[in-house]
Length: 585
Image 1 (spheres, rainbow, N blue to C red):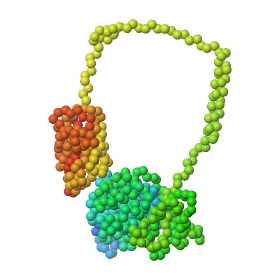
Image 2 (image 1 turned 60 degrees about the vertical axis):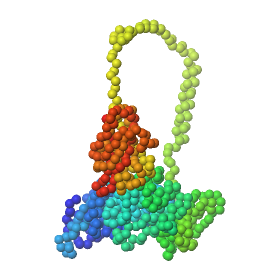
Image 3 (image 1 turned 30 degrees about the horizontal axis):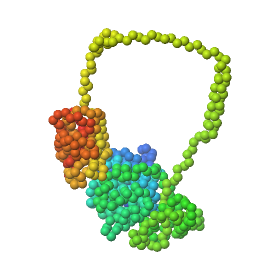
Image 4 (image 1 turned 90 degrees about the vertical axis):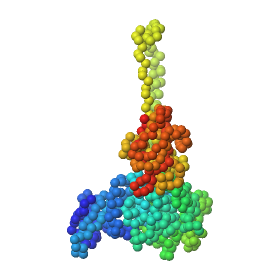
């Protein structure tokens, strides 16, 4: 985007009009040290927007990352409206100085960090938030973009909508760990970390080093660790929680490298289905001085009421109500939490959390509101109307049966037609004496691919998104594997299969593969998904823009396995297969 000049004051503040279009109104908080965030008005379209002003040595790279993210259109990702550079003229910098800006849709609602600081979230709300974020990151992953700076402050919840901010931008400005590894795998681990944080108030991943975070932004409480240095399992801090969330945390943090959670789409698959997000905050007393804001109180999830004796646990103080997260309490009312005695408390264990301050009380949690009772048309008038109609019909039928004996029935005349004579035709002729038509020529059957599927018997689920692109007839689309450090899948497995299914059994002479990049190895086999590396070997080859494997004759096939044993190399030195199309002859 070209640089736009405007005569502006050296200091940018409330009332300043950016490129004579976006007028800054009020600043809002961000944890990024080199970002100045403003609520603003777009005077050209008369609508509210948010404006991010970038500083620091990585500002230009951050603006370029925002331009790439602007190509994505997903309701869960912040929509980027404009990216550019302003030239400020003033006395302090003769000749003017450039500054990068990003204009987005309004960034509204509390961050996940704000919500969890006030109250931990319940499992149902957590599952909905993480599921929506997984879909957003999967949509970015399909376009080759990754966040790699996912954290509670980058997630906002507003009016039932989950919004992920900072795609590409935050990573360029430094909010990325040095030992990142696989981008899609890190995003998947970060989703599991958000679930861990939402339920406990503790952040299980190391935060990036450096000065990317504002000094006035409080640090996230680190998750407790075992003597061996691993993160304490979520199921020990939240016993009896949502099994899907507990398993997700185990997959992410049970393995030191998180190798069992490879991409955001795997997180979405693990959490499906989840309910619509409708966070209804409950009353929350102020936290007494001296207690940690996050991580000091045990987390309690109360079940439904049950018969028997109840435990009434008094709250601590009557501090000022938090208007953004709860209702205003009545003056002098004592806060209590009622929990059935026969249901377990989901409390962080004292022995795990280094013996937190005794006497702390349970904290209430967010609950999704109960759905409203269905409203519909009252059934009584309809039932009465149907009954009257049935009564009238039965009366008409009875009257007809009384009158009908006095009416002469109509006379029915049956005509018997003689059967036509049967003739015996001579060979090669029809019964009327005309010759039989010649037999049709045999139909030549050509192999036609009906579809394809990814087969990963030695892994935990290779990427299956876009598998249909291999057989859609469009060479501009393609299916691709995960990205690995070596052509042999990083030593994790011997190979990955792609099974082609034909519309019907047909003779096949050869197969042609169209791929991006060169190198790698594959085998063509007559086998099934149960034994992808077995069966009859029809040929081998290396990937390229167009590779044909001839079988040396016709082979009757109804399916075919492309068994991939080596991956082509990408320009950045890593390895991944991008398969555009497959044709048979």
